[in-house]
Image (cartoon, rainbow, N blue to C red; front, side, top):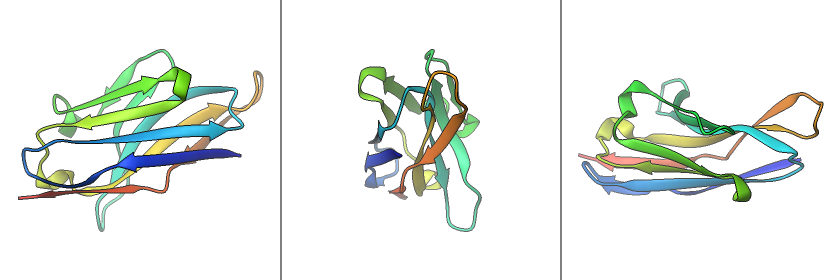
Length: 121
């Protein structure tokens, strides 16, 4: 089994900054990608940012220039630094991990439990 544990988040005023982090552990041979999705009330879960094992990143247009994703491969940890936060960034942020459990097997996806980010106006 693979455990995905998030930390960080909270409440901040518009224009402020927050960071969230996520660590994966357990039956992991390699990690293909780690990232963050978010889901606001009544809306679908959408990609925020993702980073591959090779360091390639992809961001939602709405967060480009404000959010930065980074990864520590040695610690199987991904970080999301969120600056210039807006009320519309308010959501539950979910960590996403795509792993391989052995060299030749298929990939598996895991999600964290979610952490609340609230931006007040």
